[in-house]
Length: 584
Image 1: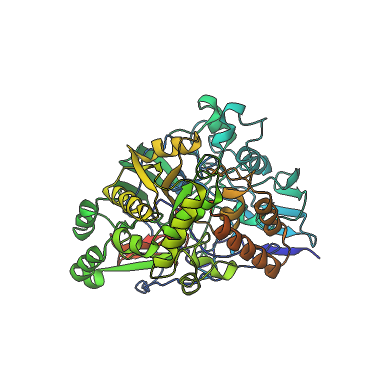
Image 2: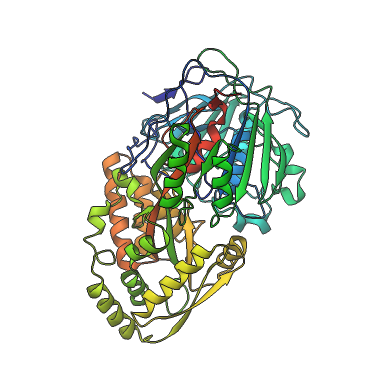
């Protein structure tokens, strides 16, 4: 028998909105795949006020979001960072997506009305909704969405040479997501059959990732070199009307949107979305706008140091009272030190291990994360159900335990044995905010205690920082990392020799075996054990130094409705169709 998941033709219940652009989350896999979902640990959330009556149509929803910088692209297919995803999310749909209202973040249908998985896990059959149209704007002009568009999406993300020019291949940092796909068949316009080379425990996760969006081939082909630079067209609820990088993005309701709510009312409810961006290190203007009623939502930053301090939260709560509510959740966005394992001195495992031991993660949280975070290993504690370590377990381990005396002594010994005592090493990171600069200075101080001198080099913005990583021009670097709903993001995609996001230049035969093992696992228990093996080995060979997982922070005015409990903070971009307000 096939495993089957489906939905009626209408959206069930209210879904969720979530904002903050450094991505997220917590569960193991699809309810309709080789693995079941896991409820995230550590999630905490205040309950939004109970809405009175049925959802109302109309209004402009205004949000301010932090952490948005110029990335040179809005192409969610080729981006492993989340601003392009946030840009595109409200204008597109996916084949399947995460259910932010379930509490388990299971995978649910979107453009697919149902799907089946064969018992051997080698065949996935998707039945698509009929009559879905792209937005009625050039060059697509409202044509019908078909199985051809699904095939195109998978091939483009995979950097298939028939679609992606060879010179751009390395930019498609998700190209390893679908390497298990053997073939894609299209029996008709509304059916897609994906056959696998071997069982893939993360295929449905990759299909549900917010960047796995459907965009029309015509839009990409009209852009230079077939890359998306400054526009988006999809089948989604809102049409992008104005975009000024780093400043704003305005979208209007798609009058031809294909979804209806459970009462048969056409979605979306809102007439307009207005997003304005503020620097992640400067919350004053955003807080003032929220207090003055100029915006409906204020999103703190995930991925790096949170934007909203305890003092900010207290100020807003005291002044707004029951006119606003805060949702805080353990999202799994985390900051870490990337180590270039290809270059001396970090081609020596003793030096990598020394950095891993010497860093005082709790001091970093207290000093720069403003308390809005928890310590994290390779996989954030929010994924504890899928094999990650809990905070309590981490506090017993080398590198995490307190006090730090024993770890620093061991780090000093390793540095001397490696022959680098007193050596000076460059560390690059983005100098786009004062908080990041302060964090880099603290890392320098901590490594100095182990006999490692650090020369901090700050780039002007994150794009320059990213370019240096891609060009292999770093030894150490600090960066935020948008978390994932599945451990494969951390294990295979970032550290396997063939991983498309292996910025670390790390290559280890044992690691590659463990990475493949967790991908090929069939049962939940097999997968969990394989993940735990990889996590333990990561601590031994230390290709990176995880620091902390930050909390998601979202303030909403009390007349706003439609939220779930965010763990993957960028996912809410795909739920604007059910967001509504009871104020005009």
